[in-house]
Image (tube, rainbow, N blue to C red; front, side, top):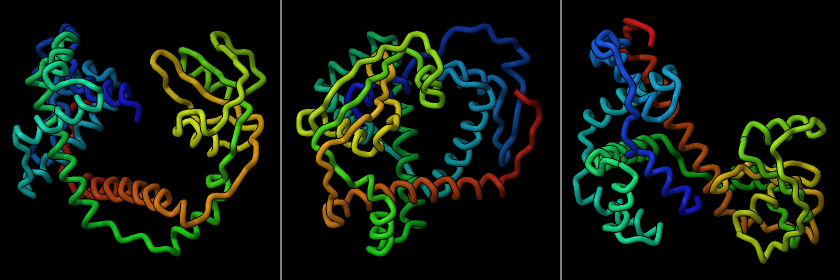
Length: 283
């Protein structure tokens, strides 16, 4: 992940709530009780406002958090201030800043640093929970599974020396998605540019994206500082197939990540299914 995007992701954890009037009934009302733990209408309103989500999305996340908190408590997982400070130190270094400058930058953006640290403490405890779930659920990937993926996805391991592309840039993500679905339909607010990229002279992540994209196809969307970008790959030059041994670590990482996410989702789906949930009032 680009350092600037990583930075923005974690800064978002600490943004203060937008001021918005809330009625007494909203503050006091309980929306849902899960395993005797209430989620109030105000909790939902607060989360939705803070992260610009719908009330339904916010309720789903808060239910998940209640389940996570319950498991963290049951397993006795904790995080101390040293771990939080170390995490912030590493985050600051990844953004070419000192921890002092990083925290001052947060303050300059009206981020409550104490609240930010509490959010990070919760995140680190959840990370520990996920690791425990994964270690209990995951099995070692064998060479047979890696070989099968390699054989079935040869295009993913073909590397080109250069690419002819059309670059689509727009401030609106939906605009580019519309073009992807219907290339001939007219779209306003899109900048087009023709380019030829040499693989050894561009960012390795961009080369990987273009290599994964078939000829005469659109790439996935990429977020730049202010816009969204996608590439239409017109031609690839001098294609060479990466050997299985060279691709093995990449395949292992990709399949492991997918399996880890699946293991976590299945774990919490089972917890949710067995939870005592009482809906009092829809948000």
